[in-house]
Image (cartoon, rainbow, N blue to C red):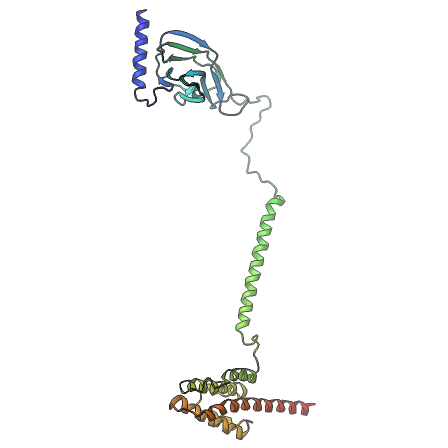
Length: 348
């Protein structure tokens, strides 16, 4: 009786020391110790042994959970779990300490403690074939009212196997080479689709490059006839909005530059880089009408005065400038058409 009292006191003080740091003293407390408290011994059903691998049998190095389940544990109950052996060998090894999981919490009525369903387990494995009798699980329990007892779970037998070898028909073979599986349509189609997509993109890029080069190549660029270009530009200077003294320079520059471009395209002279005197010295050798050429020369001279000598032309001069330029373009163009027609008639 005296020894039982001493064991109970030892269990009580060890439990208090272990759980002094617990914040919630009303929950189920657990201590991990090798001492099993004295009191009433309650045998329970066998412990569970659950393999982590989904196999029909347990093989070498398979891991298993070995433990117990308690249902209806009253809130405030303290449990003392059995200790694990300090020295282990490869035949049966404990890979983890005891772990408790709460499976369910039953809500209690007002004033009554809650009920817990608890599962305790330890992870084990074996590296040698054989049959092992696992140790029984003795869990110490002390209720909130101070009653202590020991819950003893029947042990479980563990049978560990290795992969069987058929020694009767066993023939050693060399290491097999890499297996080459045949290609399937599902594997080939994505690459075929990628090839066509890349090909279409390359063709599109090549077409864009060719179109860009042709756009900048004079051989492929469609150019309007010189007289059409000149008349279109001269049409922009119609009206008297540019006759003001401060705008006359732009007016005469636009008209004479248009005529210079037309002469360069029509007669093949470098009119854009020549002075007025040089232009009309070259134009004397062309088929341009002499009287019309003299009027155009007067227009160029007046434009030089306006551009370089700050001369202010009269409204009559301004009004006559554009008709002279238009008449020069149309008459020289008509002369070109008549010349080509005469050549065609003579050839026939």
